[in-house]
Length: 352
Ligand SMILES: Nc1nc2c(ncn2[C@@H]2O[C@H](COP(=O)(O)OP(=O)(O)OP(=O)(O)O)[C@@H](O)[C@H]2O)c(=O)[nH]1
Ligand SMILES: [Mg+2]
Image 1 (cartoon, rainbow, N blue to C red):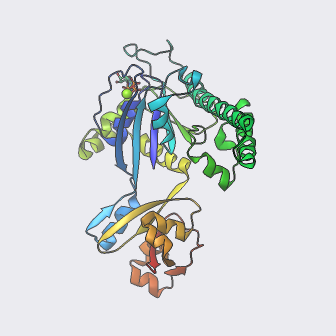
Image 2 (cartoon, protein in one colour):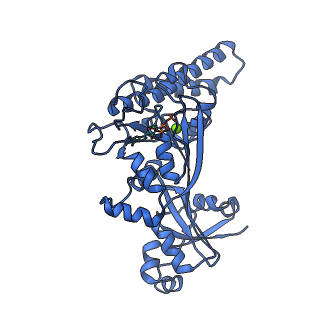
Image 3 (cartoon, protein in one colour):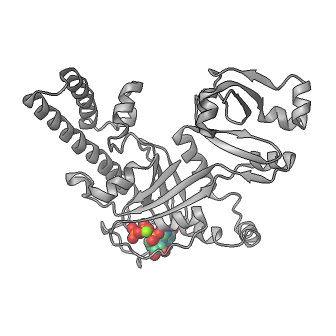
């Protein structure tokens, strides 16, 4: 899973990236230049820790999420469609964390001259929408050209034209594409097409101390945090961080809430595999079947899928072990159409 951190210049993207990754990327102005920092981060999950205590495996592997701090998006970026490298980076992401400046600090310049988080959130959301509108219009023009020239598959052209016309209508009415319902086939058709508003967005208001985030609702969920403070805490040793948080009465880093929200947004869930060698978290789309989930582990397990042995996390923990779960009838045999649930412990039987 890959999340792109985007936002106006100097909004605090790198600061929040550092907080998420405990990193030290320089927070000097990238001045609108295209620049990317990437880091792979373990998704904190107490369940994995507990399972690891139970099975004492040689290796414990948490689910991973890749964060990419992508500088270079500005107001007016999308005037002719976001181009080249930047668009290429953005389309590789599964979703976006849109950082919006809320902190007051005269020493940090604001490209728009004043601090106004609601305005900036609107501006960036419309940049993404405008980019898609331009891309879809261009595609419709190409399709029309092809029709004129003839020689191409006419039925296919008509199908595509109808689809892109629908997208165009939605965008023209300011509706993001994630709100447009698409068939599986249409989704496939669009997969390689760089549309940004099909991807989920979490707005992060990067506030200063004692400042409140906008109360207004946006088309997409939002969370407020103090980026600089969270970064400073994340860079402390765990012991120092605990002391610091106690002193300031901070119960939980807002960052963790942000990670959870971005998970919800992406509609993913975790299932686990356990054993003496390895306890491991895997990610799958909510609503994925056992066979699809097996494919996350290995394509052979998906192709040769025979059945899955499944026990719910809560059952395993409360019964104290696999044998206990088995003798209490909590270890179930499931077929390939079984819908895997968040927290399932799964063992796949495969013929390959
Ligand atoms: N006071 C205050 N300053 C902050 C906060 N977050 C970031 N800054 C400062 O704002 C400046 C820009 O922060 P960055 O994290 O580099 O912002 P950015 O969005 O990555 O900037 P570009 O990469 O240039 O687009 C730095 O000087 C930060 O120290 C905050 O919450 N409070
Ligand atoms: Mg930066």
